[in-house]
Length: 256
Image (tube, rainbow, N blue to C red; front, side):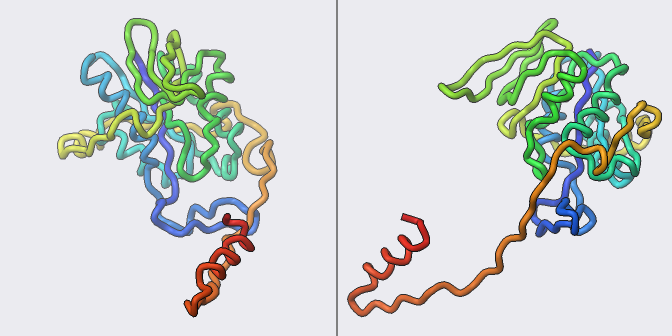
């Protein structure tokens, strides 16, 4: 079995997010890390590889040259190889353009399964995995809290409107994983050393036949606003009427 795991590099969630004048996330304004939700998707693949050594795992990312750091960690954790889609023309791509690039990257790889996090911590769109499945013309299942590959299918549980649902998809398929699926492992010393010898393939947009990219090729129009500055709240001195003043304030702020 051959599994592609979609890895994404995102701004560190502990840093203050900054926006560019165009309203996009300023990725250069904070430290960048591998998104933990994509590491959980990788852990699902690694657990399957632990049980079946014939499984081949390829870590795939779309991003600038610095995104190779996220791929390197995936290789250290246990992925066998990596694919990096990098091109300046891809900067500012929206969800659909991102899905097009990733789908083009994995299309001819002979993958039985594509694993991804259900939503990234920088965008929170949660639509890219399903878009990739649609573009590839294969099944989609997600977001799954558990995932079990048996024979020619994958099954798992997800939260539905009326409780927990069990879903099954025939392979090949794209599956999105939630934060409840698996706790990602830490790279071991051996993994760190062997990762240096693992192959990393690099593709640009032209190699994948991609056009209409970046901001100009986007299909979404975004509006953004900055968090209002903090101001000092009213002081209420209890002289017997503090409770009624507090109620009046909460009511004026539409909090009650």
